[in-house]
Length: 432
Ligand SMILES: Cc1cc2nc3c(=O)[nH]c(=O)nc-3n(C[C@H](O)[C@H](O)[C@H](O)COP(=O)(O)OP(=O)(O)OC[C@H]3O[C@@H](n4cnc5c(N)ncnc54)[C@H](O)[C@@H]3O)c2cc1C
Image 1 (tube, rainbow, N blue to C red):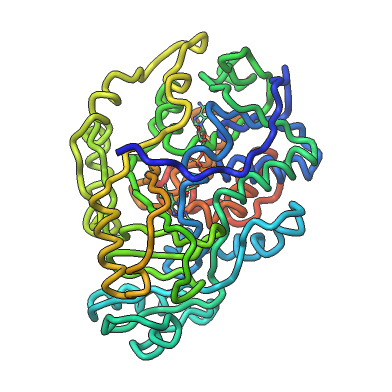
Image 2: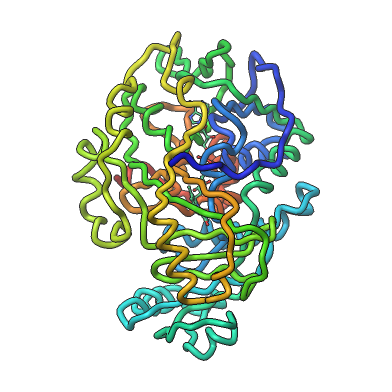
């Protein structure tokens, strides 16, 4: 079923494409927009070029969790820096992005489910305020529950921000500081002169530039494939539902093995089936199978394979095209994958059984988003050896909203040769 994507706080972007700039950013998701904000603040001429609408894909459709808890070793520096940057962001952009440190709790049913959380706590030491909690403590944190939880993990300093507000507020601030943002304009290819980057070719003509940040989300693989660079990501689809405004047990974001919920800015709750993502099979599933197989057991255990329309759609989509176009991006302005009503119903039923207050929840809307997953579930934020002048910032593997403030800044640093915010080594493409 096609869902109804959540409304994005509207932004008036530029109708005109500049002929030149210093840095061109491909994709107005939250990562590209944060990069633009940083560059504009440094006085660097920058344009963000978006094939559809600002934040139309993952960046407005996500759950809005901002967490350090459970982050892998490579992702943790990004999460810690982002924690600080999220706190500064409202003053920096002059708007409320819905960032609140309301805490995040994961509740588990078995010793085996708690073990990875215990191992993670041991691996990060005392730097983060996460702590293991008992069933009694869960009942105090999130009243009205019916389940006898084995235990859980709670991080009071984690929190949330509002995806439908945050990217828009960052975009407005970037524009106020000098960035240009152009929507409905696909970047077809890079312009290369003598093997060196000289600009980007869009459906409305060329923009000359010295650097490019490719922040194209699920599309970065196809874009780079056209230039002969293999960027290993596969798509998975997550379905989400939002309730009408209601009283609930907590403002904290809560995850269990087979559901999660958090109160959002509409007064409703954003809910998903944590134990279920759909991996639509496509030619890439075969091409990349060997790279992804080693992680199938760990990160991929919640994934359900599906052979459907996506297979044929994907097969008919061009893999190579000339810069004079047209490219696949004009035909796919905004990816709007089908909602899996079964997964949403499962999430709702599991949640109602655990916290009966949700028995009276009425569903306001449902939607789905397509996520770009890498073989180790960590992003790539790196200059490309094969294409000097191009920095890729993609493959955020379902975690990139929370880490966007640091990820976008790091991409801006790498594109301009500034001192990097954090050590970029863990995010190199060469690790694959
Ligand atoms: C359902 C769901 C739940 C999630 N929950 C969370 C969460 O709770 N916490 C968290 O941290 N993360 C979460 N995520 C992940 C998070 O949303 C993403 O990691 C993050 O938004 C990625 O941002 P991005 O800017 O890289 O990509 P996107 O937001 O996907 O933006 C990429 C943009 O590039 C544009 N583009 C691509 N190619 C071209 C081209 N050739 N020319 C012009 N434009 C182009 C696209 O149209 C798109 O707008 C979730 C994701 C989903 C879908």
